[in-house]
Each structure stands twice: as C-alpha cells, then as structure tokens.
Image 1: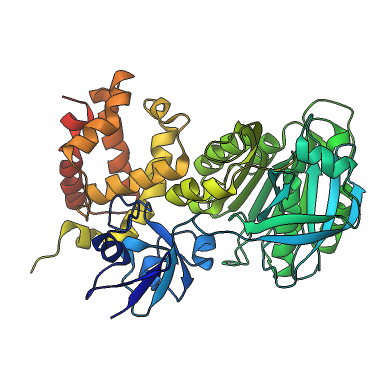
Image 2: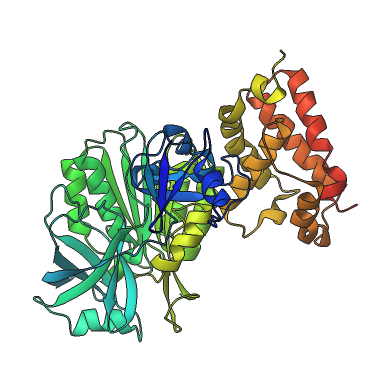
Amino acid sequence: MPHIRFEHRTYALGDNESVLDGLTRHGVSVPSSCRSGICQTCIMRAVQGTPPPASQASIKESLRARNFFLACACKPTEDLEVALPGNDDIPLTAAEVIGKDALNHDITRLRLRTQPGLVYRAGQFVNLHHDEVVRSYSLASVPQTEDFIELHVQRIAHGRLSGWLHDECTVGTTLSLQGPLGDCYYSKSDVNQALLLIGTGSGLAPLWGIARDALAQGHSGPIHLFHGSRTAAGLYLMDALQALAQRHPNFQYTACVSGGGTQGDYRLGRANEIALADYPQLKGWQVFLCGNADMVKTTKKKAFLAGAALKDIHADPFEFSATPSTEQHHTEQDHGLSCTPLAAQRALSLTQRSRAAD
Amino acid sequence: MSQSLYERIGGEAAVNAAVDIFYRKVLADERINRFFEGVDMEKQAAKQKGFLTFAFGGPHHYTGKDMRQGHARLVKQGLNDSHFDAVMENLAATLQELNVPQNLIAEMAAIAESTRNDVLGR
C-alpha cells in the first residue's frame, strides 16, 4: 500500500484510492473541484517519486516534465512525496555578475555565474532579490552552450531594482536569486513543428533563449522570430539575430517598428500584427508570446482563432500591477505566468509574481 | 452490456479533440463572443471541457445550481434563448467536423439541451 508524504507527515492510501481522496480522508485540505481529471484544480507536484502516467496525461508537457500531476487522477503504485504548487520554499541562491553591457539606450545585459547545478530552460525566469525588492527576469541564455545565465534588464522610470541594476550593480556584485520558475520554454516534442515567436521590448530575452535552445536541440522546422519596438532605437541584438539566420536556414528574424519612421532593416507596424498577417493559418504551430501584456493577451486569442491549439500557445506577459498577497505593496511589474494553467497559475503566483524590469 | 455514450464517442480523447474546435467556433461567433470578452482562455477552455464531458455523458459534477450561478452574470448581460441556440449550433458543427455519427450527435444535443432553463436562469 503506497504512502504519501505531504508537509512532513505521512499518510497511507487505501486500495485503489487517489492521492486527493486519501489526503482529504485524512483531513488534509487540497483544493479540488471536478474530481474527474478535468478542471485541474487539484494539481500538485511530486517532490520524490514518479506519479503514474494517467495522472499527468491531461496537463501541459512543461508541467509534466516538472513532475506536476492531478491528485484526483493519481493512484500511485509507489510512495510519493508531494507538495501543493507554490507551497515549496524556493531557496535563494547567490549569483555573481560576470558581465554587464548596454544592449540599447535602456536595456542592459547582465551575465551571472550561478551556483553549479542550476538546471533551467531558456525562457524560464528567475526572481532577483535586492533590498527587499523582488523582480522577475527571463533567462535569455542557453544552458547547453553557455556557462552563465543572461538577463535583459529594461530601465523602468522610478523602478527600484532596474535603476539599481543599471546604475550601481557592477561586475563582481553578488546577487540573490530564486528559480528557475515558469513554463514558457521550448519542449522538444516535434522537431518539425513550425515555431512562431513574437516579442516586444525586453520580451526578446526569453525568445532569444528559446530560439537558440530549439536550434541547439536540432529543431528542423521553421522558426520565425518577430521583435517589435516603438522606435528603431528600441530594437537590439539585430546583428546577432541576423547572424543566427545566416547560420540556420530554418531560422528567420523580422524586426518591426510601430511608431513610424524611415525604412531600415525593419518593417513598419506592430510585430504581432505583421506576424499574424504573414501567417494567417497557425494550425499545428507552436507560438511563443512575450512582452507587453496587452499585446500578449490579444495575440494569444488571435493565434488560437488562427488555428493554433491552446496547449501550443506559450505566453509570458509583462505587466504592471499591484501585487496582492505578498510583502510588496507598491505597484510593480508582474510576471503574468499564463504559461501555467488554472490552479497552478493561481497558487504559483503567490510565490512567483512580480515581474521583470523594475 | 451496452457501452455508455461517453465510451461510444471515445471518452476523454474525444473530448480533448473537441474542446479546441468548439471553443474556437464559439469565440469566432459574432452572435455570442461578447460574452467571452476578457476571460482567461485556459480557465475558459477547462470549463468548455467540463461542459463537453457532461454533454458526452461522461463523469461530471455539474448541478443545475452550478449552471444557474455560473451564468447569472451573463443573464444580466442579456443572455437569452438565441444565444443558447447559437452554442447548440456550434456544438453540433464541432461534432460533425469530427465525423461523429448523427445519432450520437442527437443524444449529446439532448443532454446539452437539458441545461437550457438552468443556464438561462428560469
């Protein structure tokens, strides 16, 4: 008879009993609703042990890879140690700044050396802690080929952390971070699938990582990255992206400027509108959307209506919002976490909120 | 023993195949898509999956009370029979697209139809 370990206590499951029923029977409160493997309210994570395949069949691959499962559909044959999403005490680790340079007039690139053994995927994010301020930054580096993590820090007017990172933090400074977190990354499920990547501003950071991660893993289907900015001066990494396109015939890069201007190495208009006009039919595509929250929300719906399956749309909205339920009471930029579904999104947001760039 | 409707239709795999198609039709339908403005797409898709599982005769925990509470806000916004009819149309079109036999479509339509008064708060 399998045993379930949860919050330092062990509970025995009955014959053919689900983790949800077993824990509930012992008086443990696990959020649940349909109890039929549908609503995903009872999503949990296996900290030790492997959840049975049936309990992971209907959740996103990225969550599956991190051992999330549905408690109502989980009838384990071995012992498991489980946790509710967001209940984990995510440890802080130290990272040293080993590189700092300007990518454009308001985005700084930081490269950090982390503790050995940090396992992450390009496109996930970390929370940086400094002076009681916590902000999230996406990971632009590719772990297979780079021995540092790379962040793109956009300067936000009156931003407490972004100002400090731009003006005071130097090579040699030690930072404190949590992570990796988030589910917006490349999953090698079909190397022939077409990938559409759309980002605005420093939303290029996760996409720069995701595109190179896919290529490094041998992705052979077409990958088209659209990067948008209001002004031509806001574009960055153009040479590097063009060089990447030179090296990989299946990778294409299009820069877009929405605020008008003279014709240059970019197209005039919003990145999301240009991309969807170029690709009106997205059935079978995998879509990654990062940056401005309104752009991400609108484009997510349009990509779905254009035929992309909901599970194939990965979104990472950067938005300003007051963050509830945390120690921070000021308005700040918030990591929308819409890569995670439902309950996981709600619960994870308690520990993983507070996004980027400030 | 005869199989249940849910088994005959193909169970959860069939629901998964239907949910994106159905939700896409609903979002594209000018008659009803205003009721879906601004909702979280993942949450909405999970609700659609619950509804389709119910219509397919599968395991569900829907009650008339849930249906009433869940749609009360929309009834205040003017949800009426014509909108319910539009959803039924989209459901039938989804099943036709998946080549579900006409007699099974009729069985499902009858189950979905049974929620009309609760959904419309009557």
